[in-house]
Image (cartoon, one colour):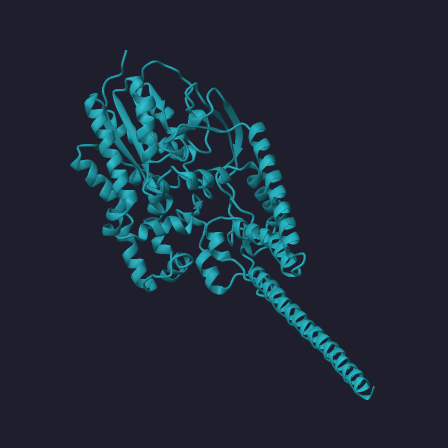
Amino acid sequence: MVVIANIDNASVVRAGGAAWRYRHCTIYLSAVLDERVMRTNYQKLIITVLVLLANLLLWTVPGNVPYLIAQQRDILLGRYSVERFTALLLLIPVTVLALYIIWSNKANQRKRQFQVMALSISVLASVAAMDFFLRLIEPGRYVNKGQFYHRQPNTKENGTTHDVPEAAFRYPTTPPGYPDINFTLTVDKWGFRNKTELKKYDVVILGDSFTEGSGVSDDQVWPVLFAQKSNRTVYNLGMSGGNPVTYVETLKEFAFPLSPKAIICMLYEGNDFRDTNFREKTGPAYALRNYLRASPLRRVGQQIFIRYLASTAASRPAAVVNTNDEMALDAGSMKALSWLPVAVPDGPDAKYYAFKVKALLTHWEDKDSFLKSVGCRKTFAALREIKKMCDQRNIVFIVAYAPDKPHILLPLIQPKLSPEQLHAFMALKEKNLPPPNELMDALPGRINICETATEELCRAESIMFVSLSQPLRQAIAQGQQAYFTYDQHWTPVGHQIVADALYDCTNKLLPEKQN
């Protein structure tokens, strides 16, 4: 009996020890788990704070406001470009959804991930459906035909051109521009700006918006004025946004069936020599990018942002010189912008002109770099191709060279512009510039590089070349407003100057009028 009693007591002791160890092990495990939970929550809190701080930092860093003003782009809340503000706005729901997943535990993490995925898909599907519906009810302005395009045939557009700054945020001073123009844009059955529909034409003209006539009415476009002065039938194949690629394809599709005796191709140096004109325009990436850019929903959203968030600057021009103002421009920025718009000529006949900083920077490229660029090589190749096709059909081929505003204005305004002002303006975009005095001395020698190279190419290929630089510069120096103040295009005065200059240079060389 004694032995049995001892065994039972030992069992009880062992059982009690096991219970004690189990209890303490449970307490320990619970403490460890609690510590891990606390550590996990602490880590989540740190991540949350860092994410929120990163978002806040992105909002607190302003855009390059002086550069946006120099490019005549809208500025939202006095700090951001439209594109940057849109990206920051879209980042908010992305951040919220990410934090929603981060703060889930292992038990419901998959559930939250599924919820976020389902919500994202439903929102994207709704947006895509709305965008598709808007595309259906909104008639397209252009008919795309692969490498080229044209307007919707048999249409007419009426409107008013206001020569005012493009954006609410403005230059330090905003003198009045060219008077308002009530215009009519008539599109023929082939989708181009013509009021006549003949089977044959004496002259067919290729070009972009400078040929189609941006901002002016049907009877003010230089091809119409040229036709009147030369007493020849002229068909205008100009299309806004065109480039040498579209010129070649448009020529093949529309020009040759009209049996012209001469073809005039107007090259605008501001756009036609860009490398981007010759990027591959096929493949899913390009198609998606092009589709998104044409989104009416995107356009409506940007218009809303501009209307309600850029309008605060409409009554406060860029000359916000009060240093206590959060949107005030610093002294360097004022030096860069204060001379625009510039008056030419001095005195009571002065007209005012502004141009974008990137337009001036295109003239800073040296000759070797220009000749090696994709834009130059491809444009020259397009001119050779057009020349070859014209020779095969016994058609006179003429290149009319259209300069941009800086090309025309710089020689006229250089005496009144200090080296520091010019340097500060170009430095808004380009940081690798020589000192102000060296820049001022070097830039005039580079202004004509593009035109000179094009003229040399035309001479080598036996292509007739007509420069419009000198006629436009002379007219502006005399007080005629050839360009709009706040837009890059020609006014009705500019179109008349161009028509007269082309007539004077080509009339004796053009074939006689067809019967």
